Length: 145
Image 1 (cartoon, one colour):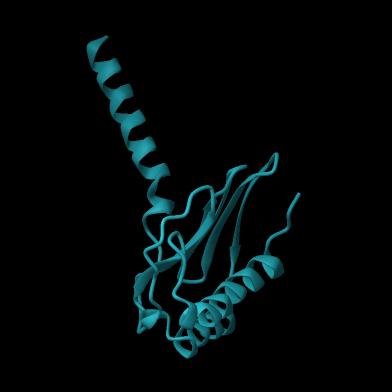
Image 2 (cartoon, rainbow, N blue to C red):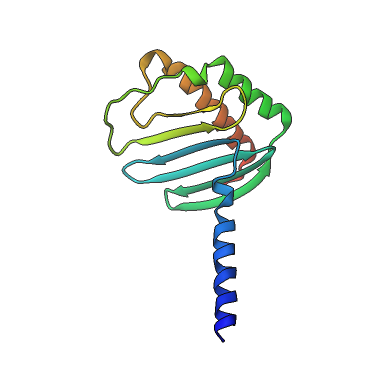
């Protein structure tokens, strides 16, 4: 009986660890969260595979889809053209704000930026261009219920 419980426990641990892998194994992530009425939106890109999830406004859905090499190249160009690595985050305190974080783990634009404390004014246009590129991918590929 103890062996069965031990094996069952080991299986549960392995399954629970594997289910979180999608959230840690990515090349590019886009995450939007917070606000007075909380919203959680995540898009994780690994190679050409994309995992998208949304929760908020009384809705909740997840979707996996493929992104083309051309779309990945466009996204990388937008990151480069808008100096993603040079964007400066402000240090003002904001509360109940929906913030967006972008994390790039691979390539020339490797870095992490967030507008949780705002983006400095001279980089705001660059930041908005980058956010628009991610939003276009979502609008094109996600079929919202």
